Length: 189
View 1 (cartoon, rainbow, N blue to C red):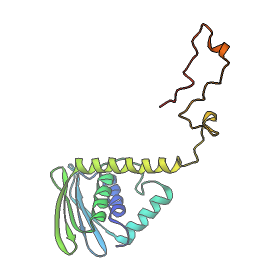
View 2 (tube, helix red, strand yellow):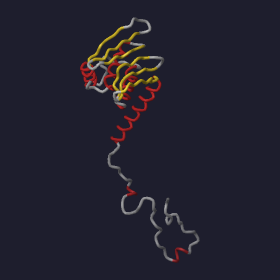
View 3 (tube, helix red, strand yellow):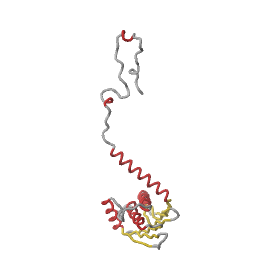
View 4 (cartoon, rainbow, N blue to C red):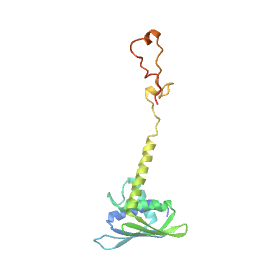
Protein backbone atom coordinates (compact mmCIF):
# COMPACT_ATOMS: atom_id res chain seq x y z
CA UNK A 1 0.00 0.00 0.00
CA UNK A 2 1.46 3.36 -1.07
CA UNK A 3 -1.55 5.54 -0.30
CA UNK A 4 -2.25 6.52 3.32
CA UNK A 5 -5.19 4.92 5.05
CA UNK A 6 -6.76 8.37 5.43
CA UNK A 7 -6.80 8.92 1.68
CA UNK A 8 -7.71 5.39 0.61
CA UNK A 9 -10.51 5.06 3.18
CA UNK A 10 -11.85 8.48 2.14
CA UNK A 11 -12.20 7.22 -1.45
CA UNK A 12 -13.90 4.02 -0.24
CA UNK A 13 -16.20 6.16 1.92
CA UNK A 14 -17.15 8.27 -1.11
CA UNK A 15 -17.94 5.08 -2.98
CA UNK A 16 -20.07 3.78 -0.06
CA UNK A 17 -21.92 7.11 0.00
CA UNK A 18 -22.50 6.73 -3.76
CA UNK A 19 -23.99 3.26 -3.26
CA UNK A 20 -26.12 4.52 -0.34
CA UNK A 21 -24.74 1.78 1.91
CA UNK A 22 -26.19 1.45 5.39
CA UNK A 23 -23.71 -1.12 6.68
CA UNK A 24 -20.23 -1.98 5.46
CA UNK A 25 -17.27 -4.22 6.07
CA UNK A 26 -13.73 -3.71 4.75
CA UNK A 27 -11.25 -6.56 4.48
CA UNK A 28 -7.70 -5.61 3.51
CA UNK A 29 -4.87 -7.65 2.05
CA UNK A 30 -1.46 -6.66 0.77
CA UNK A 31 -2.84 -5.71 -2.67
CA UNK A 32 -6.59 -5.21 -2.24
CA UNK A 33 -9.46 -3.94 -0.13
CA UNK A 34 -12.70 -5.88 -0.38
CA UNK A 35 -15.79 -3.92 0.59
CA UNK A 36 -18.98 -5.73 1.52
CA UNK A 37 -22.05 -3.59 2.09
CA UNK A 38 -25.77 -3.62 2.03
CA UNK A 39 -28.66 -1.19 2.12
CA UNK A 40 -31.60 -1.62 4.45
CA UNK A 41 -33.85 -2.19 1.43
CA UNK A 42 -31.41 -4.26 -0.61
CA UNK A 43 -29.26 -7.35 -0.88
CA UNK A 44 -25.65 -7.55 0.32
CA UNK A 45 -23.04 -6.85 -2.34
CA UNK A 46 -19.26 -6.61 -2.57
CA UNK A 47 -16.52 -4.97 -4.57
CA UNK A 48 -12.76 -5.37 -4.47
CA UNK A 49 -10.47 -2.37 -5.00
CA UNK A 50 -6.78 -2.68 -5.70
CA UNK A 51 -4.61 -0.16 -3.83
CA UNK A 52 -3.42 1.20 -7.20
CA UNK A 53 -7.04 1.77 -8.26
CA UNK A 54 -7.72 3.69 -5.03
CA UNK A 55 -4.62 5.82 -5.66
CA UNK A 56 -5.84 6.62 -9.20
CA UNK A 57 -9.34 7.52 -7.96
CA UNK A 58 -7.79 9.75 -5.30
CA UNK A 59 -5.52 11.48 -7.82
CA UNK A 60 -8.44 11.96 -10.20
CA UNK A 61 -10.54 13.51 -7.44
CA UNK A 62 -7.70 15.84 -6.36
CA UNK A 63 -7.11 17.03 -9.92
CA UNK A 64 -10.77 17.89 -10.28
CA UNK A 65 -11.22 18.76 -6.59
CA UNK A 66 -14.37 16.67 -6.48
CA UNK A 67 -15.69 13.26 -5.58
CA UNK A 68 -14.81 10.68 -8.31
CA UNK A 69 -18.29 9.15 -7.95
CA UNK A 70 -20.18 12.43 -8.45
CA UNK A 71 -21.20 15.32 -6.24
CA UNK A 72 -22.86 14.21 -3.04
CA UNK A 73 -22.69 14.46 0.69
CA UNK A 74 -22.71 11.49 2.97
CA UNK A 75 -21.56 10.03 6.20
CA UNK A 76 -19.06 7.39 5.12
CA UNK A 77 -16.35 9.55 3.51
CA UNK A 78 -15.62 11.77 6.53
CA UNK A 79 -15.95 8.87 8.99
CA UNK A 80 -13.60 6.58 7.10
CA UNK A 81 -11.09 9.37 6.35
CA UNK A 82 -10.95 10.26 10.05
CA UNK A 83 -10.59 6.59 10.95
CA UNK A 84 -7.75 6.35 8.40
CA UNK A 85 -6.01 9.33 10.01
CA UNK A 86 -6.19 7.56 13.37
CA UNK A 87 -4.81 4.36 11.86
CA UNK A 88 -1.99 6.28 10.14
CA UNK A 89 -1.05 8.19 13.30
CA UNK A 90 -1.00 4.99 15.38
CA UNK A 91 0.92 2.99 12.74
CA UNK A 92 -1.88 0.43 12.69
CA UNK A 93 -2.18 -2.04 9.82
CA UNK A 94 -5.87 -2.49 9.08
CA UNK A 95 -7.09 -6.05 8.57
CA UNK A 96 -10.85 -5.68 9.07
CA UNK A 97 -13.27 -2.81 9.68
CA UNK A 98 -16.93 -3.54 10.29
CA UNK A 99 -19.84 -1.19 10.92
CA UNK A 100 -21.39 -2.28 14.18
CA UNK A 101 -23.77 -0.62 16.67
CA UNK A 102 -23.39 3.02 15.53
CA UNK A 103 -19.67 2.67 15.22
CA UNK A 104 -16.81 0.86 13.52
CA UNK A 105 -15.07 -2.19 14.96
CA UNK A 106 -11.44 -2.33 13.83
CA UNK A 107 -9.11 -5.31 13.83
CA UNK A 108 -5.50 -4.99 12.81
CA UNK A 109 -1.87 -5.10 13.83
CA UNK A 110 0.09 -2.48 15.73
CA UNK A 111 3.83 -3.10 15.89
CA UNK A 112 3.18 -6.75 15.05
CA UNK A 113 0.71 -7.23 17.90
CA UNK A 114 -3.06 -7.76 17.55
CA UNK A 115 -5.08 -4.56 17.71
CA UNK A 116 -8.83 -4.23 18.28
CA UNK A 117 -10.76 -1.01 18.86
CA UNK A 118 -14.34 0.19 18.51
CA UNK A 119 -14.85 3.78 17.29
CA UNK A 120 -18.24 5.43 17.80
CA UNK A 121 -19.56 7.35 14.78
CA UNK A 122 -20.10 10.38 17.04
CA UNK A 123 -16.47 10.30 18.20
CA UNK A 124 -15.19 10.10 14.61
CA UNK A 125 -17.48 13.00 13.62
CA UNK A 126 -16.10 15.10 16.50
CA UNK A 127 -12.50 14.29 15.46
CA UNK A 128 -13.35 15.19 11.88
CA UNK A 129 -14.75 18.58 12.98
CA UNK A 130 -11.70 19.25 15.14
CA UNK A 131 -9.27 18.36 12.34
CA UNK A 132 -11.15 20.52 9.82
CA UNK A 133 -11.08 23.45 12.26
CA UNK A 134 -7.34 23.01 12.78
CA UNK A 135 -6.73 22.89 9.01
CA UNK A 136 -8.73 26.09 8.42
CA UNK A 137 -6.95 27.81 11.31
CA UNK A 138 -3.53 26.88 9.87
CA UNK A 139 -4.57 28.22 6.45
CA UNK A 140 -5.83 31.48 7.92
CA UNK A 141 -2.66 31.94 9.97
CA UNK A 142 -0.50 31.31 6.93
CA UNK A 143 -2.39 33.98 4.97
CA UNK A 144 -2.21 36.52 7.82
CA UNK A 145 1.57 36.37 8.25
CA UNK A 146 2.04 39.51 6.23
CA UNK A 147 4.06 42.38 7.69
CA UNK A 148 2.07 44.28 10.29
CA UNK A 149 1.53 47.99 9.71
CA UNK A 150 1.52 50.29 12.69
CA UNK A 151 -0.81 53.29 12.82
CA UNK A 152 0.89 56.63 12.25
CA UNK A 153 0.75 57.54 15.96
CA UNK A 154 2.87 54.52 16.85
CA UNK A 155 5.69 55.24 14.45
CA UNK A 156 8.62 57.29 15.57
CA UNK A 157 10.63 57.25 18.74
CA UNK A 158 7.82 57.33 21.29
CA UNK A 159 6.66 54.13 22.83
CA UNK A 160 2.94 53.73 22.09
CA UNK A 161 2.00 53.38 25.76
CA UNK A 162 3.46 56.78 26.80
CA UNK A 163 1.66 59.92 25.84
CA UNK A 164 3.57 63.12 25.05
CA UNK A 165 4.57 65.22 28.04
CA UNK A 166 2.97 68.59 28.74
CA UNK A 167 5.00 71.45 27.35
CA UNK A 168 6.75 73.74 29.85
CA UNK A 169 4.76 76.85 30.62
CA UNK A 170 5.71 80.21 32.08
CA UNK A 171 4.84 80.96 35.74
CA UNK A 172 2.23 83.44 34.57
CA UNK A 173 0.30 80.70 32.68
CA UNK A 174 0.50 78.35 35.67
CA UNK A 175 -1.23 80.86 37.93
CA UNK A 176 -4.28 81.12 35.73
CA UNK A 177 -7.67 80.38 37.24
CA UNK A 178 -8.13 77.15 35.30
CA UNK A 179 -6.31 74.05 36.49
CA UNK A 180 -3.72 72.73 34.10
CA UNK A 181 -4.78 69.51 32.44
CA UNK A 182 -2.43 66.82 33.64
CA UNK A 183 -3.72 64.04 31.45
CA UNK A 184 -0.75 64.54 29.14
CA UNK A 185 1.79 63.94 31.87
CA UNK A 186 0.64 60.49 32.97
CA UNK A 187 1.87 57.31 31.34
CA UNK A 188 -0.90 55.11 30.03
CA UNK A 189 -0.79 51.50 31.21
